[in-house]
Length: 354
Image 1 (spheres, one colour):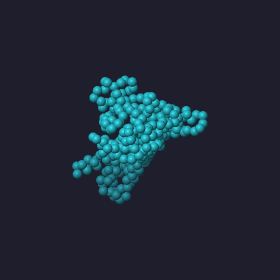
Image 2 (cartoon, rainbow, N blue to C red; image 1 turned 135 degrees about the vertical axis):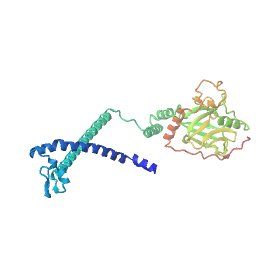
Image 3 (spheres, helix red, strand yellow; image 1 turned 180 degrees about the vertical axis):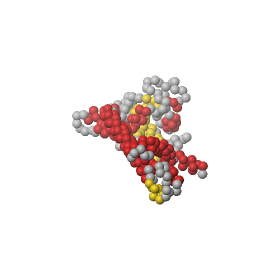
Image 4 (tube, rainbow, N blue to C red; image 1 turned 45 degrees about the horizontal axis):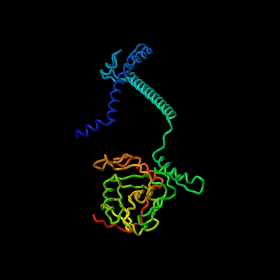
């Protein structure tokens, strides 16, 4: 009950009503003084100096001549106190008029304040710079630029457009397509345009997977001198298998991972690192003929190494994936219209001795 009473008292309308009663009582006293001390004497002067609020006439009974209204009421006579009634009417009219003027003044002040605020908003809006594009508009603009850059034709500037697309994705122009193959040539791949990024990955997963693949019979060395695995990152829709897909097998480091490594079992050449939930794919750097591999841009996940002091300083050695890497992936995804193509030409799983 105490809580309900507290909630009732704390309501806004109860507080407003209390304020109104207090102010109204004080205002009534002012009006009563105005009528009794100013208006009634003026009216009494007009009617010959009589106190107008005491004016009455006797309907029945005897009242001493010149008796006040209070004495007349005490005499038990039937009187008609028209002066007091008229005084009450005057009080009401004055109160109503004052309230009307008060409300009118408040409304005028409020309208003036609203007009002033509106003018200030209009001035501020006129002076403010035009709003910048939203995040969605920026992404759509990136998509449109990427699509425009990807247009190829037989015209004079087709080669320049391909170079623009390659630079937009963070790589260097390598021509139309790059032909790749396993060591024995049984599996042939094709990668179109430039890679999104050329990197060495030093994460624990890549180093563990490289050790497993290097242990396969006749497998080439995969790890670089730094201990990292060289990767060329491409859009999935830019990579395809031309022939020999029956020789491709996959393996995963554990049952929960979304990443798989694909090996050509004809000669145990590591071919692809596929992020199955992503829109990009990594081609192993050993697939490029000597002297044709794009220049290395960075090493990532160096923070997983116990000792980073031995890393070469020829490119940035990032402790984790950089923001620029994710920006390039996002730009590529926008250009792909947010599609995630699947690599569906792998024929089975690779048996490893773990």
